[in-house]
Length: 482
Image 1 (cartoon, rainbow, N blue to C red):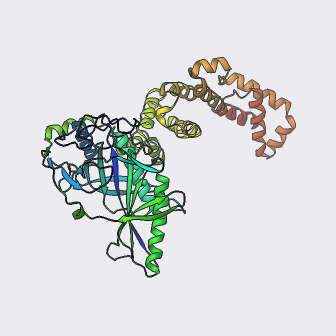
Image 2 (cartoon, rainbow, N blue to C red):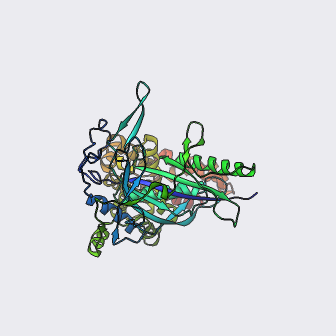
Image 3 (cartoon, rainbow, N blue to C red):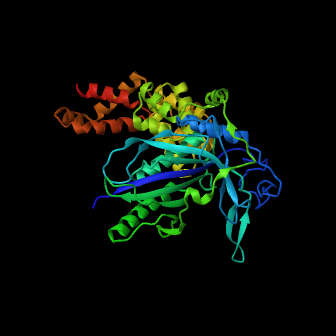
């Protein structure tokens, strides 16, 4: 039986303000428990919230980046529910009048299996609203007891809600990765998933083609793209098996256990009316003027999609190269610096996507931690472009730059890596090899073309790997032809 998968995401992005959304308490991660829980965070009687301007600016920048409608007036509401780590008994959020309305995000989807080709898709964004985070329950804190850490209470969040436009785990992961890259790219969040700065709730349902939407179950608090893919795959199959075996899907909030690879129900899923939303009487409506919008638009960097388009149209790169180079703003900025110095976009792209990325992966580093500066890399790439360095020599220079630093020219001189490009020297070297291997020359001229590699090997050995390969091949072909 054929089933359609329907997926929507709610992503909680912690905004990169130094202080909380409604108070001056610090948002620094890793402080001792409850040392950053001020009077507003713990809801002492009589305290009043004061809205953080920086949080508003970051929310608006996100809306502009996804082409969304920015509400000229939005309203904060109280979302009423009980958690041990929610001291007020309600969360200040936005409900029917969010600051960011409908927008869209273009994603590049890499199918997770099979021979399907990558493709592009547009995912609609329903809304993005500001809210405060709750505290954190710390299980097993002392003698099997649960403690409550309120440091996180009041941290500013932007909850980004998509339409149910995704129909596979691959699309959901691609959307989450693209969104993660974007919030880091425009500087509104550090996106640190291990620290909870970027958490995904995934709504999953299945239906037969042409039928109404099925009952959804929400997988909570996924902070790993790998776990997201595993959780969706398991949940989809569980729902299909349940229905085909005569069961019924009940709306629920569920958790994913990475140790077993299974999802399990945590509680029945609440609807909006269960939270008894009403406007927060302590906060005025949020007004955003056209002048404020233009000021924030001017602060946005060139966005990933625009930069990909520029790389393809102006620099002649492939779509694959452009996608790889815009995987992070750090990578794209690094590439731009190299291209400005070197001029050869394809050469720069090949080294950044190839050797540089591979070394980062081997050392478990991200682009921001790269020990080779773009200026150092450019110095090496210039020497490849002007034929001073061979490919093998360049790899040796790169390894030295990575481990010891320095600059390419000094390393080339100290290690004798300068490539021989003098045509006279190469011709003399080839003449010696041809004279010493007359029998092989005769075999080559009789039709054994595969012997060409034999002569190349001898020539490179004789030059100690320093002969310019292109010039060497040209001279060899000419001399061997007689």
